[in-house]
Image (cartoon, one colour):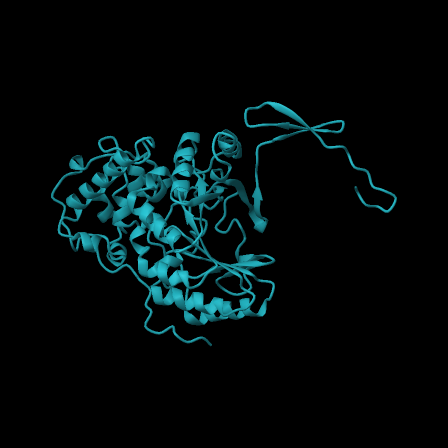
Length: 436
């Protein structure tokens, strides 16, 4: 159907973590987050904090990748080829707990493990409660299935008219372009399918079937590219896909859902952004978890996207013991706004199998939103949503600002808990049935 797909190979992990480096120091020599402050510690002295994060990354690189040049480290292909993907590689850089170590045994079809060297440099090697560590390092809790959990809690498969496409909402579709991520989040909604190489076939034929479906449905005006992570595709392959979608007259908006700018910021090159710029209107939704992710490299990646005229919004999953704290969320959302990323969604963690240790109560999410609203800029407060089980879609969950009615007055509670009345007389239908 479409041409231009040739000579565009998908990046795959090729090599071991230690092909280019040898460890010569013990774990005790590796600075922990207690020894080297990270970007989450203070936001009133940004320059000093960024310098300390830079020191943390440089120290990690020197100790574990001493033979790797700066140019290699800053090459996204190198980062992907040298992802940490197994227990042996991980134990060389992190002092694992028994719970973490045992998670690598008899894992069956559970979500695979992978983390880029760059993101691994941000992880505390000795503290198992460290937020970024918990988000990406496996734990035996993933083997425990709790009430209400399932492999496909959102029933995406039920709304999939062709493989790789979810058509749940009338005017927009979800296009799953790959099963590959540079780093796998342990709470991934699509853990049933991502990382399962040779089990899911993301081929040209499959893409063409999806494009044909979108072309045949004139009501589809918005296409979200996700996966896996679309930005792990080569420039040529990604451009082929964007070009094919742009040829469909009724497709108005293309969105890319990604975590690459956070875990693989080296991928966001000037070449990439120049290419993306040709396919406006194009939006990018970035998955952020914690303010410690807001490094100098991530800031530079977001700046390239913003300077290319690409609107960015963030999507954050509420995670117990990781970011379920008002101050953590405040720092995260303030930092994002400074990077020209608008906080968009705060998700209640989806009930995938083995995710109970990540899920908070819904009330915890409401408390956080309630303590942010009014105490910071409105556009810095995301919408708290639950992606309803059984395919119900995203449902906004908000604190109870409307208390009730007092005659012709609407009774409201503001962010300080003070009660106010707004004159809003009850309208009754007129003789012609209309409400004035």
